[in-house]
Structures are given as C-alpha cells and as structure tokens.
Length: 166
Image (cartoon, rainbow, N blue to C red; front, top):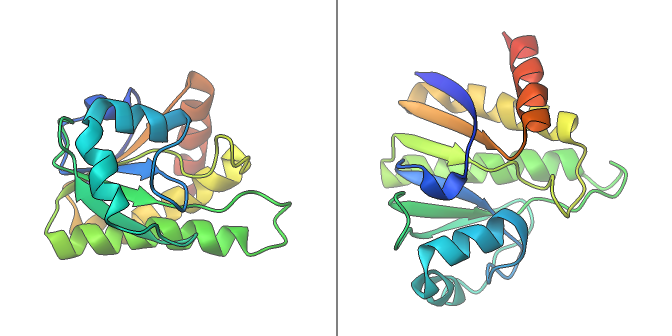
C-alpha cells in the first residue's frame, strides 16, 4: 500500500472514491466542492439533497455519477477559528469518517482533497499533518490512498509533512 501525493484535478481520478471538501448542507459551493458538483452533473446535487446535510467532522457518501470515481464521500471539516474550538479534533474526525465509510463500502482506493484549507482557512501545514496522520493510520486497509493537492506549494507542504511521519 502506498500513500501518494499528487497535484491533479481530483475530478479526473479513476479511484473507488474521491473525497469532497463539502459544507454542512452538502449542496455544493465553491472551490473543489463546486468543481466536483459540476463534473459529476446534476444528479449529484439531487443525491445530496436526499442526505439532509451532515455536521462538521462527519461525512456521507453518494455515487460519483459522471465522475471517473465510483463514489463521492462528502466530508465537512471545520472553519479555522484560531485553533481554540476543537478544529484539529473535528478535522481528524472528518478524515476518519471518510475511511470508515470507505471500509464499510469495501473500497480499496480513495483520493482526498485538502479538507478545510480553502475558504475555511485552516493552516495548510497543520491540516496536512492531520490528514497524513489519519491516512497513515488507515493505510493497511487500502491499496491506494491519494492526497490530491491544488498547487505546487501544497504539494511541497504535504511532501515535507509526509517525510516527517516516516
């Protein structure tokens, strides 16, 4: 098993599931959430409507519809508020919920967007440390875990954090 860090459009990945950095409504938004909704097509929004949202620190699953990925796991991370409101615990919980859902579905490959690091303002290095720690704790159950990042800067942050974990 390997954890891969790649700079790519997550909507193009042919994996069992991609993880969407969603909001609590699950009804789409900006950034990666909007890109995933656009690429998956209108059926994704309809499927998300039936889920009735999900709280911060949790996740829910839908089919991938027009995406190469079979499934989309919609994870809701916390808005950064200075680190005094259980943000680290909630972010780790969002990643853990994704893995729990993937295991229940029997999935073997999963790609994660960087949850909470966009408009939610979570510091990228701290978020990468949490994401990679949870990935490492779950790697034995998966053939492939991908951290799919948005920029070269993000890739360097993830690579540095990953080296520190080894």
